[in-house]
Image 1 (tube, rainbow, N blue to C red):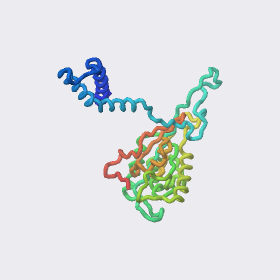
Image 2: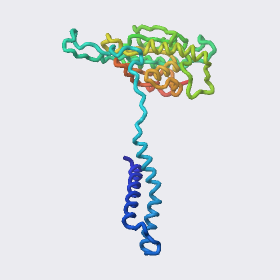
Image 3: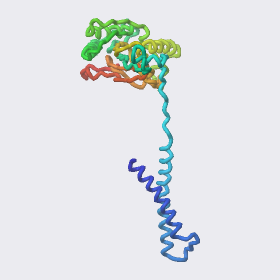
Image 4: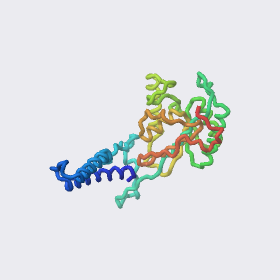
Length: 297
């Protein structure tokens, strides 16, 4: 209990005590002419009650607010549309003891934002800057040093993402890479609050939103029931796509995707557990880059 609340509650108790004491000490048929001492006592009680009354009101309000339970939105355990039993496997081949053991493995989804690029009207001209290539080279080194058993690299088919994937794959020889149009940049969901300099049309929101939601459902889901070990997948794509995926995976309001930003070449790491829990290990991490190599625009 903090000091302010303690003072408020104590003041409320004092008001009640003064009222009770006044009722016992000073008769209700008190006459102002009876005694100067009694008159002084009554004036003191009235002043004390008046002084402490605001604190009493505050203490009552405090007591009322502490009894209101917080509103909690329950977790949707079937958010990926997979049956809950998919996360349970038999403990023994014949299940003779009737015991069930949870599949405890996870899918590690590592999202990389493309590097800094030259702005242009056509996608073909939106090529990485020299800094952008250096950023993804550093990210590739970081992924290599983590020494995870990466199974695949998915990358957007937009030029800046393709070139980013090329830089990363230099450090991950032997890892399969697959392009995906689903991961292309776009407007995934209406912005809240809106931005004066970025106003996607209703047509763009419908077209891009449907595609990016399809991408989320295609790539973000709990491990299959037959999976026996953790898996690590890399996705090289775009800030809007990654931010929307994070909001959807954590069951945040999807319109909140516009409220945070990601550095070029940064790492965002989602972990999807076998029971449907999702954890965000890091968001837009670029701490492995020298300060002069970090950019957002």
